[in-house]
Length: 221
Image (cartoon, rainbow, N blue to C red; front, side, top):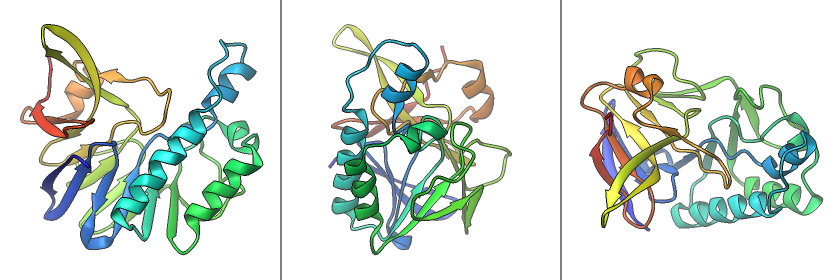
């Protein structure tokens, strides 16, 4: 799989083309914003019916990354479920799939703004995970060096063969890393947004996901 190697706060990390973060030294795989059960939540709130395969697709890709890296620690960086009822309404087959992925692994659910309360699933629930020299939390909260967060679903708009396209991306500067949304059917916030431009340092790069994970200067205009 395509990947990009970099360091943050002295830790050697790998951004995978899938949107997952791999920390080989800790045998740790981190994904953010799975938003499992989004199709169910949209339908419950009177929105358009979405194809009902999004949770299975997300879990399939997550299992592939776990198999690829042989990770023993899994960190789900918040908004793993689209809301509390989404977790309660997951089909039994998908609940068993999650349970199977958790078997034999340290599994950590970081609370997000969509899922602030623990679900009745295995694993450990935390507001943040200090794992020196890094700290994992859902929403960036400070200029603390070595912070890993999600929440924003960053997307970079680039020109390819004369066409403008938008790609999910990691955002990296000397202090922090913001992960892209990993879940199927998740939207995104352009890197040109005021929120991301004010959060990231001027030297920040966007690491594009997809077949070729590669860094570019963070688009701001």
